[in-house]
Length: 282
Image 1: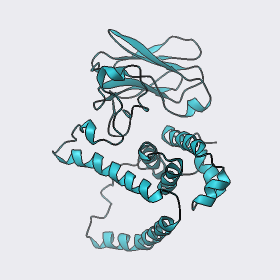
Image 2: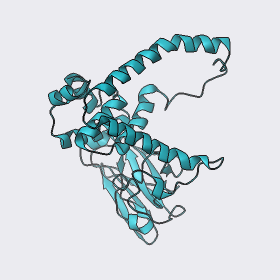
Image 3: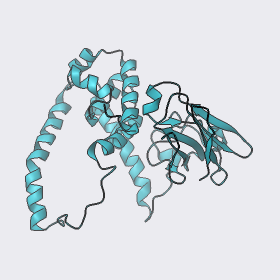
Image 4: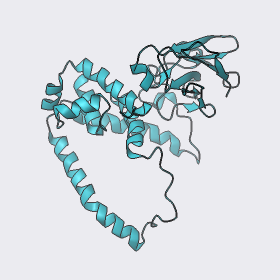
């Protein structure tokens, strides 16, 4: 069985948590949405790519803001579609406006029309709050897009315009979870240097959020018992331990180090077998 990418596994984990808060069975989800019971089972277990509308509908039924799950969906969708691994279009790609490009667009038109028709039918279904969820998702995208259009390079967004707003900044983030504080959402955090592959096959990297002015460690492709620790001079180190089999297939994050420690950070991987730790600096 193929191990799902960490992005896809993280989305499935988030969907299961939201579904638990709805209190609905798979059969009840199927009754309230355009998706069958078997489809929901596959979505929740990461066996099948999840439609964006299914994510929005689930959040609506749970009374949850869809922003965080939609951010996870964007990352997972890039894996499912191959965009995360595909190179840029090569010289053989027909240029816009050329006869080849027009023929390609004409062939794609029936598929696009069918997809739009399915989406229109879904919007007419009586899913509680789905319209509000879609509107909220659109507002999230708009709020993130606007601050980036003010110059030729990406701007650091004002935290007051972000949705959901970051839960902390600087020293106030120390020891807190980057996901719960909305510091690790796409566009809010970057890796400090390339990821490192350890002797056991795990991957580790340091993440830093300018919006939250905080750093943390991230690890994936782990084994139960592995741990990763991020540290900086004058601050207590922050560690996360991989405790369950489910944790081995998703990203795991250390608590944050609040403040501008970017030049002094050190990340150490502690393997489950007790062999020597492996440490890296950005």
